[in-house]
Each structure stands twice: as structure tokens, then as C-alpha cells.
Image (cartoon, rainbow, N blue to C red; front, side):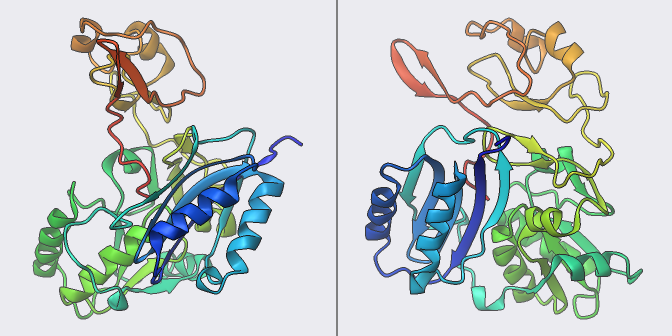
Length: 324
């Protein structure tokens, strides 16, 4: 079998009475299975990404759907040739998405199916198309005509929403919002509605689901993912390259970690510049005291840990693990 592993993405906002106990139940279920994961569980629900041998992934999905509290979980499935996480991680987190305020999820926007989303994109109606991911996700791929809010935190998005009200009529202007798998849109769309926007819609299942159901129409580039794959096509259809090499500006959609272990920043780079700068994101990093020996990798897998002064230290990856 060419791609014997399933890569699953899923989430559900629903009360979990005993999240710590649920962590233990998940860990026990994974014993003896060929599974790697990054799963977070809270009182408010579950947010999961995992890869598993196809038969073990099927067992997990059947187990989840056999339980009343998880019957409605929708799994988005890709196939891959190997595991995409370093280990099976299941953890408790107070919040599934790192935001510093309480959001009323009952105000989350209505979901548009991938088919409805495409129809709206092609409708010609005046609208706002918002990409609520991070800038490094946007850089390697996004929908035609989408706007990336200039925000690094949820609090900054709140200010952006207020500014948007001064530019567009919040009562009549449709807002279409998307992210990787859908979970961020649940929160960001609720905030927009709290700020007075009445016609807010979110893409059901996010970009992943759109690619699985509709292909790449209206999408350019690749999809950034928070696992060893880093950037993947959303379907088998070819799309224009939108990413640019940070060092020379030529088209590129390959991410690398800077070889300077004290930087370790993810950056887009073409093969020529990568070799010329020995894997570093800038000239200053080439002169740093702790630089990994350059070794061409295609595809590159993110570096996670390096040793310093004899102690294991977590490298700065410049990406919030498990955001989607």
C-alpha cells in the first residue's frame, strides 16, 4: 500500500465532564496501536490531529463514534506514507485555542458546506473574505481575493473587527471566514457577530474539507499543516505557487528551520539559497555559535530539540503547535 497511514484532523466543542479522565482513556486506547498524535482535551471539548496505520485509525474513529459524547465528531482524512507526528501526545488544556477571553460559542457563524462556499465565491456579491490563520500559513497558500488581518493575537483581531466596522456596513456586508480545519473560525466568527456583524459565515471543516470535497478551484499554493509535512497540496489538482523565497524572492513553497539552533525559525526558501546560506534564514545566523551542519532535506522535517550545555532544550519552532 503506497500510503498506509491516515492523517486525521478533528475537533468538537461540547462539554466534557472529566477531561483528565478522558486523557487517560485516550492514552489507554492507543496502547498497542500504531498511532502518533497531538490531541488536546478540555472541559469545553476536544481538538485533535493524529496519524495512524489505516486500520488503527479506523478503530479509533469507530471507538469515538460509539460514545455518545463524540458521536458528532467529523474526521477529515488524508493519506500519507509515514507517521507525521513524533509521538502520541494526548494532553489536558484549559482552552482548546489559546485566547485570553471567554467567547460565547452560541454566536458562532453559520457553516457553509464546501459546495456552498464555492458558490458564494463565484456569486459576484460584494463581500469580505477573511483568512484567520497566521502569516506563515497565509504565505504558502490562500484563497483568491482573501484578506489576511494584520493580527498576531486574538486581542488584535478584536481591534481589527472594530476598524472593519468603520470601513464596511456590519449589518449588510457578508463576511466569509476560513482557517485550516475550522476550529479558529468558531471563535473568531462569534467575536465578529458580537461586534455587530450580522452576515458572517464560516467554511465547514476549513480548507482541509474544501480540498477533499471540491479540489483546488479558487485556491492558490499549498496548505501549511502543523506536523512533519509542513506544507501539502489541498487536492491532486495543481495550483499556482504563491510562496516566495525569503532570501531572493523567487517562487518557493518549501519551509525549512533555520540552521542556527538559537533561531530555528521556519522560513520559505528555494534550494539555491538554502545551499548558498547553508540552511540559515539570514546572513547573521550563519555566524552564530550554534549552527547545525548543513544537510539538504527534501522534504524538510521540522527540528524539535537540540542540546545545550548538556541539557535538552526545546528549540524555538516559531509555530504554535496544535493550533489546528
